[in-house]
Length: 452
Image (cartoon, rainbow, N blue to C red; front, side, top):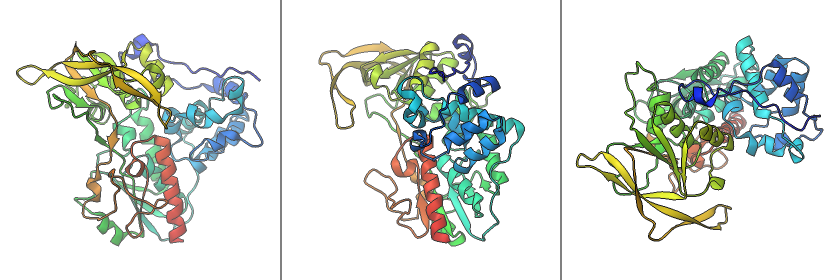
C-alpha cells in the first residue's frame, strides 16, 4: 500500500489566471483506480464518522476498485443528493479525510477526489440515482434552492413525497450558482445535479420571491410541511469611514455578478467595473474566491487579513492555488479608513499593523493594533469579504421566532411555526455547503417522522 496519494492534474497557473475554466481536471480512470487501491477497507471506518451526510465511503471506494462505477454512484446517492458538488467544494481535509487511518502515517485517502470522479462519470454515462418510492400523497414546500433545500428535497422525493422548491433567483442552486466561481464549481455541474432532482419528481419554481409574491403562511395552508433553507446572503461591512465610496463592494456583489450574471464574459450585459489595484478584506473561502476572480479580470489583486498565514480560515488548497496564481497576501494588517477623492472615488486606505495575542477559547489567537503603525496604501477598489448574515425577506408576515443574532430558532429543525422546519445558514449563520446539506437531511428525516 502506498502512503502518498495520487495528486490530481491542474491547469497551469499562468494559463488559468486568463480564464474561468475549472482549475482541477479531476482523476482519470487510471488515477482513480490507483487511489482507490490505497484504501484499507476498514471494518470500522473512521472516515464515515467525519462525513456530515454519512456516505458509506469504503463501499463506494470498493466499487471503484471493482470497476462498478454505477454501483459506486448508487452508494453515494443514498446519502448525498449533490456528489459532484461535494467532491469539489467540501472541506474533506477537515472531515472524512481527517479521520482516515492512512493519514496517521502518510496521506489520507483522497475521498473527495474519488467522490468527484464517480459523480462526473455518472454525469457522462447518465447513471440514474436511487429510484423514488411510490408517491404517498404528502406535499412539502422548500423555500430556497441552496444546498440545504436541494438536499431536503432530494431525501423527501426519494421517500415518495411531492416536493416543490421556491427560489427567488432565476436559477436554482443558491450559493452554488451565485457564490462559488466557475473555476471551482462549473455551473453546468450544478445544473446536472439539479436535473437529477427533477428526475426524482422535484418541481422547482424560480423567480418566486417568498415573503412577497407568496408568504410562509400561504405555503402552510397548501402544504403538509414547509422547509426554510434561505441561507445567509446578507454581506457584513466593517463600519469604517469611507465604506460608502464608489469602488467599495461586498464580495457577495462581485461573486453574484460574475457567477450568476456572467459578468466575466466579454459580451456581458452587466459587467463588473473593476479597478487597477484591489484589496479584498478577509481570509475565508469567499475572500479567496473574490480575489481570484479579480485576478482573472486583470486586477492587481491583494488579500488583506488581520492575522497571519497560519490563521487563514480558507481551505489550504485554495490558498495554495491563490499563491500560485500570483495573489499578494498583506497579512497582519487591517483597514481603519477608506480614502476618497472629491468625487467619492476610492484612492486608498489607511491601515494599521496588527499583533497576534494569546489564543482564545476557540483556539484562535486574538489580535491587537500596533500603536503608531498607521500608514496609507493606494488602491482604487476595496472588496469586503467579512462573512454574511441571513436575509429574512422570505420570512415577512410569518412571525417566526428569531434569535438575538437574527437566526431562525429551532428545536432540532422544527421552528416556532406549525409544520415549518428550517436548516442551514439561516439557522447557524454562514457555514459550509456540506453542513447545510447535513441540516437538509436532518430536516427531511424529521418531516418524514412527523408526517408518517
